[in-house]
Image 1: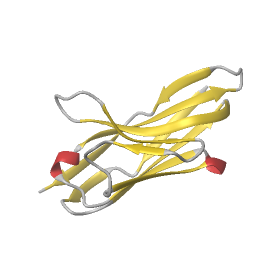
Image 2: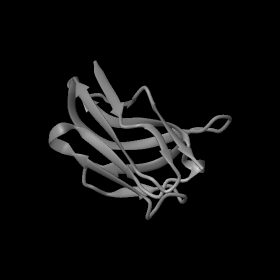
Image 3: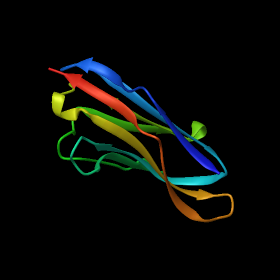
Length: 120
């Protein structure tokens, strides 16, 4: 059993910052990649940022220079530092993990989501 637990969401004014964390725990052998997705009301879930085990990153077109993804491999934790937040960043943010479990199977897991609300 694997769990991804997010934290750090909340309400912030435009121009402010938030830092999201996602800790993976359970029957994990290794982690291939972790990422953050978001879903705004009435919209599809979209990729925000992703980081591989080797540290390669990619970002949505709307966030480079404002958001930074990082990971602590020793803690199986991924972070999303969000600066210069805009009202259009308001969404539920979900952590995603592509990992290998102890039975050597590759699976994708999702966190429960954390709300980020940016007021204008």
